Amino acid sequence: MTPPHTSLVDGPDGPLEILTAGRGEPHTVLAHGLAGSIPTTRPYAGKVPGTRTFLHFRGHGASVSPDGPWEYADLAAELWAVADHVGATQALGISMGAGALCAGLARDPHRFDRVVLVLPAAIDRPREDAAMERFAVRADLVEAGDPDAVARHLLADEPEAVRADPGAQQWAREQAGRLIGSGVARALRTLPHRSPVPDRELLRQVTVPVLVLAQEGDAAHPEAVARELAEVLPSATLQVLPPGGIMWEHRSRVRDLVGEFLTPMADAQATRLGESTLMTDRMTMTQHVATPEELAEAARGQTTEPSPTAYHDRTQDVFTVERPWGRFQQFATNERVTVKTVTIAPGQRLSLQHHAERNEMWQVLDLPIEVTVGDRTWSAQPGELVWVPVGSLHRMGNTGDRPARVLELAFGDFDEADITRVQDDYRRD
Image (spheres, rainbow, N blue to C red):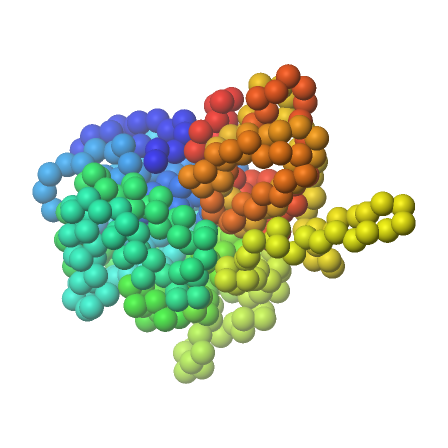
């Protein structure tokens, strides 16, 4: 599914698809991982200020898919081309995107003012372990054109606790749809066996602040690689998160850490985090070892996000109590919830969208509403309750001739910027 309002810019080997959102400074470029996409990268930018530009590397989205083997140097050239085109001063790369950033910084160490490396998978030694072999299996499934099999394979690599979550399942289905028919299969076979730089010592020239994010128990992105990378980068801060999925169970914390690090006003807090600080459970290193509590206190907005398995259909919790004067309906009790009344003008509809941080529950108030949730579209009647799981595509519209209202309750970390629009009648990002 192609993100809305993307454009094509010239890359070294052909056009590259980009999406730019926001305005002003700083300008950050964000690069996805292997078999990733612009939509899967956008949640990382939820609290990044200024202008954000997301790109599709070769073989992904509408970008060019040149013949030949994939090399990190080629990906770095594409990332630099986009960064130069938009004037980016900051960069974030995820997995393959982190490798592309390392490859580019090895030859141009001062290109960016600040850099975030998320889940780096390799530095200067090719990997031949079992986790890398799974990419070849995924390539077979992609080439076979079976989206259900690809989705199952993607889910199997996610933490066990989130595999049954509707948001994770929706994500896997959407990712599978993007991969089928793309040029990614060739990369899945070759790139996992490449290394971003020929010699890690080249990265000692990178003196700008770098935030390295890793998680425990991730076979495809070993914690040891992130630790070694933080050791070689002179001004690195390493954050190792517990198991559970860096953008599932720890999504809010990651957004806070990335947003603070890439906010110019956060220099003082970044100093508190400590350049060359390594958060690790091993105390044998010479650098200061920050505790999780220190880093959490330094991070903005210390919210504890519930596990995705805690998200369930909250319409089942709504109850009605009869009173002599009538009745009341109760939707939530002593919980963090954001409540709105949404009024939709006649003949209008909201964008087809999804959220990364919150579930929603709607109650139609006075007139029928055309509702879409996932693959289903229907006419929801007054009084009807609708559950919208985190990550699921949804939309509401008014086909009538009078304004229609919906009561909306949002459960989770509410942020108006937490929205990915897939289709919008008003051409908004």
